[in-house]
Image (cartoon, rainbow, N blue to C red; front, side, top):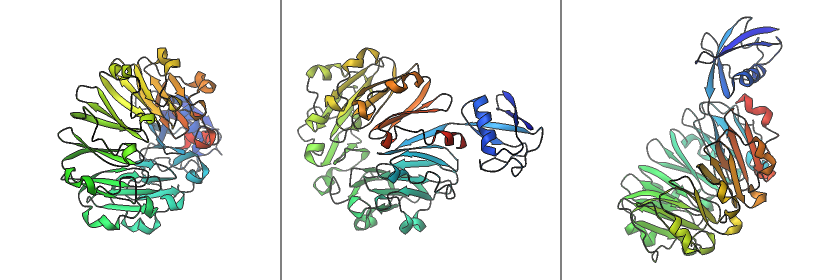
Length: 443
């Protein structure tokens, strides 16, 4: 047996005994079970024990060695069909959900170094690495294959995605796109205008870029790719948001300019009270704007959150702090930490069965048709379509001390205080993480 001690910077220390034939990953699991959370192990001479497959002998560990354990906060990224769990600056990403999106969860580990961001929208993932390059995986024709632009992906600062394509802002403010040309992956027609870009936003098949001067450049064949009808109004843009089919730009004076599919939020010309806007949120078919007085104005698909239906809902929307959406419903957290919902009742718009539980709410996330609310005490309340995560009864006893929740289109994942992971919803969309649980400690 080999005896080593592992200590946190706080001074908390644990003595561990492992067989000399053990691997670094096995030692790490023991340390994490004893000290909690995700840990990075560092030797006395400053070497990080990175590869869990290394033997303790190959890692240079000896009897009586002292290791420092640095706690890492895991980050959970959700795409439409799959999740990715990773640690900032790490060299490994664990994914689960739709196999066509995830691929082999360790297939790209040799390419990863110092992961900074992971982004996904639908059928592929992209990760910004420590040197500013990008690694991609998933469906090749939906952005999972970036080989044609790999040499241009240097100094990447920000990523955005449509349903089938990616766009990256580089350090010099230019933009590189790849994926399905019809989905925004071909920006050649506007490439000369994409200079000094500071923000990107995507619908299902189009991109919009905000430049440093507050103007906007768009591309893509449909769903807001053509902004010519409102181009003269797109000045001093402060923020961009999108449904699946339309864009909304908040200007510096608090007014809003919209374009794209009219019935899905692209036409706000007849919306009363749409001024002094602080921020905008969206479902797949409608927008909701929080105004300076913290009231809410909505527009877009009437059956998908673009109408309150019952006027009493609008009366209750006072002192709104945050809004989240599913495909067709909204949930708003008020200043007193209670929740108001509206929109399609089958898509999360009806929270009446759990309304008395929705107190002291800290965070809300939505799948396509269900919501999950994280309370201040670390418990979780769910409602909406049971199949898409609205029913969490099978994992309710495990949902304690939850730190964060994320959602794909049909499943939820929760990170607990001790670094463990709980998932529910459609198994194929990320609701079943049993196949990767044993790998989580190796991040």
